[in-house]
Amino acid sequence: MKPIVKQSKHLALAGLIAAAMLGGTVSAQTLTMGVRAGPDSMDPHWSTLGGQAEALRHVFDTVVMADDKLQLKPGLAVSWKPVDETTWEFKIRQGVKFHDGSELTAEDVKFSIDRIPVVTGPMSMTIYTKQVRDTRVVDKYTLHVRTKAAAPTLPNDFIRLFVVPKSIGMEARNEQFNSGKAAIGTGPYRFVSWAPKGDMVMKRFDGYWGEKQHWEQVIRKEIPSDPARMAALKSGQVDLVNYVPATDYASLQRDKSVDTFIADTVYILNITPNVKETLPKPVKVDGKEIAANPLRDARVREAMDLAIDRRTLVRIVLDGLGRPANQLMPANFFGGSKNLPERPFDVNKAKQLLTDAGYPKGFEIDFFCTNNRLPGDSAVCEALSQMWARAGLKVNANALNGTVFFPAQQKGEYSLWMSGWGTLTGEASYTYGSLVHTADAAMGLGAFNKQGYSNPAVDKLLEEGSRTMDDNKRRALFEKASELSMTDRALIPTVQLQTIWASKAGMMTIPARMDQETLAYEIKPKR
Image (cartoon, rainbow, N blue to C red; front, side, top):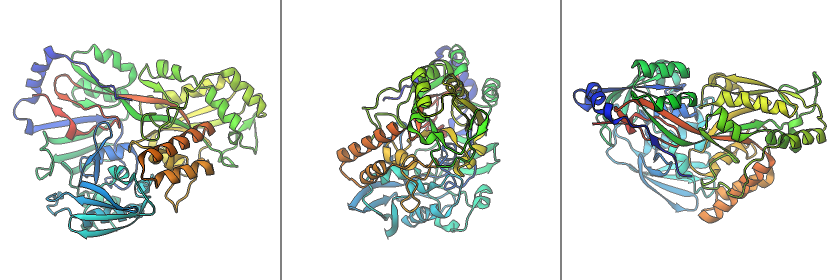
């Protein structure tokens, strides 16, 4: 799948607006971004959530970086290679300075890897270091990372390995990061201030090792409300916004004061059925709670899948800004399957399957989802509830703020839920190893498998694939794992999302990234 990237151009107005808004030198500019979600901490090892990583990339660099199509490129490591079956060598970039003036060395990278398991955030970052056994500093700019087994995808994992200076000490926590004391990175911008759920202010770091930044100051204003974010753009309070609602896209394309940018993303909204023997909250049949968990029955999961009209979700609910999904990541990603068919829509068969499973009148169950994280998440949540109703199920949709949803989801408090997942590393072990492998803390697999799904055949394929260095063999193993788990309906994918940015006309160019990240250092002012 190639990303779709389109820009609405308003050339007649562009020169006038650019002159008025840019006035003077580019280096004196402030870029104010209205974003739907921001970080929950200034600690880059606190959470795996996309909003957290997106914000902190401005301050902290990663060992390996990814371009807008998620292809790997050098970051704080200029090169990497396997030196034997279980050891990777990373050559660390020389001459890099932290914001406090100290020099980056391999010791800092080692410290950052060692620190991740110690930080107890709500969404553990250990999924990015799960393959690491230990690390050894060879010299000032060389680090050897020894893995538990052959780990061909380790460089992919390290696109989320943010580096902090060893000097902050292993005891540094949120208080020190949020105050700025420990918020010391090597990134293009240095931390100035942050108010939770408010503004994050950063100043250009002139000692940055990479390209000199155009924006002297960057302000990320967290505005969760879509109407409020759009109003902030129209009123001039912000220069650009992310996650433009699909309902506003058509009118914005006709608005000569605004430029729009659209792209396919890696994010897919997935339904997760809890298949544990006992649900956290029992379902009801004819108004009475029952002890059994109907979601353990494959026929029930298939019925819920068949009751979903994905084309209608895309066409009506998302106003065309998406694609029907049949697996947990884009099919052309490494380990994605091109053998999986489009998911059919068949309400009558869904009803028959429910009857065959012993639920001719359906059942009642609570369904939870986010309402502020990804475009259309709450609207899709409500639409699914209505679609399931046609098959005879009473599904109570509850759209929650992500700060409420994710902690409860991680604690296993939901029987049925939906959230978005993006395959940010571009390969299957990240997604399937996290979501469908049996939860195994010792192996570092199944970190986000809170539903109790376990299939030894899938586990075996994922484990073998994760230690197979031959690309073709590894791809085939991952493809089979994705096919088996999707046939099981370990999770039920619904739609792959597209995303839209909007900015003041003629002011800037925005690279439309597949991971949806809005990165000031990639945004260029128009001359």
